[in-house]
Length: 193
Image (cartoon, rainbow, N blue to C red):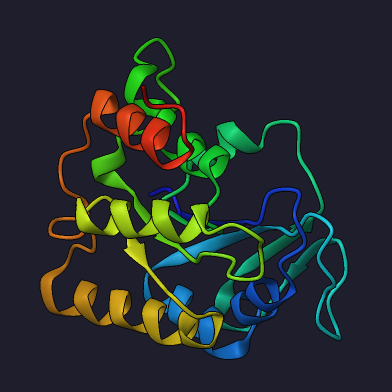
């Protein structure tokens, strides 16, 4: 049986509060409760909390943790992950959704088999991350954690739902239509006519 994987991605922008919240003991315990065995934290230019450094480590709760700044194959890793915790940037959302159109690559898995948790970076100048997250949440395509302070609680909620229902995706991830996603991204990012 394949272990489950969770990936954190912050892209290239620094997002220290998300990295710190994700690597907290409470968040890692919730990931273990979700059946996650491998955790990949793509931290970009973010500062790491004390006691963490780039490379592989085994943590409590039986989790294998890899911390990396950047990865050439990050999009592929995101496409294969069971759970993705991400800033709400358009590129990272597309990396999660891109397997929709990639039937030629059997390594990617359908969105309906995976869970996306978005954490908008409210420190950015414009509000496109919040706008995208709000629309993804409204459509049922992602769970949104509006504050990094609430990340552990959001992951705990997913774990509680899994325990109660046996599946975290059935009512969180509505059927995703690639065309609708493209129109939403175009509209939010100002490319719509």
